[in-house]
Image (cartoon, rainbow over all chains, first blue to last red; front, side, top):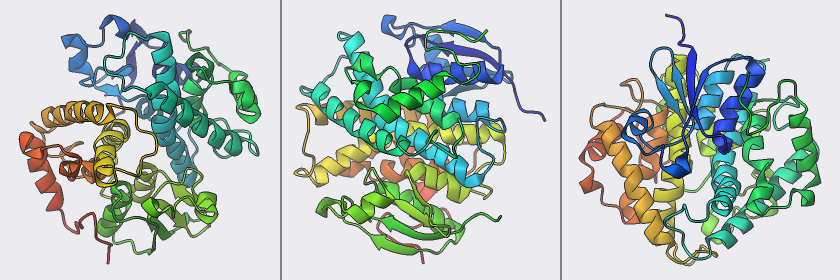
Length: 209
Length: 209
């Protein structure tokens, strides 16, 4: 039985997580239907969407066999398997995953959350007092680690642009919208420019065509 | 060139993340050296440890080529690749990753953090007011989603025990220590018992032998 093919992406153009899937598909030449759901308007909490994505998360990639795959980094791994965006070497693939799991905890949930909270301050129902200060501290710690990492290499894994760079770029390049100053991180900024110069690059508000 | 082999795990027996690697190695018959670092005593913030793991995280798996691999779920993927703990099917592998990324954000950082904060209340330097209440809410939301998921299946992916179950079990089975009542979640509790009955199972405070 051949693998199913991607058919449709449920997405939201503000979402760095949706951007991971869109950017990979742009660079792999994969065309799908797009349906945008405004999560701030509650469009990811409707019964039809929760049936696809029980956690109400964007993005969801629907495949030709009807599978609705969620979790942006899992979608990214599925899309890039056996392509130039995923190393063939077993250990390099583990390093790609390492950066994706790091991103999930320390970038998405910190830089991404700061950006979301600054852009939609009334949307988060339960926000412990002092959360923004903690996120600011954690975000700068994560950016310092990335700065040290990227100070002596061109890309995150194996000196080649890969899915690890896509995953990391999604919320790092727009960290300024969460009140982080990327000007303080010169190696991270230079890496952002290299990522943006890759063939087929699209910006976070673009749809592959 | 053949793949490097695992040599040593830096671990801490309280850590659910370390347990993911230990449990997989117990079930795969992989023997390594163990070095325990008490993170509450600062033993993961020493220069030698930060050189291995810049984020100061447990676990770290050292390989025969000198690689120090961090991020528990990446270690788990590397250990289980091409074994009975990782599905051969591409889409099932993506579903395993989906649960691992879900676990990273919604279980490790919620149930795991609640357990850590209740066990070592003086250790977290920056804790926004109301954090425990938010974690309690988020943790019950995650457990409800797992309960619905496991109410009509035996294991998380493909009706077979896999690395997804190991990753999820690590902090779910001990959620009680973070003030969650698993008795409220009968399908999750039954799944925990099935996981604990797998051949070669060890508990969180055990080392494979």
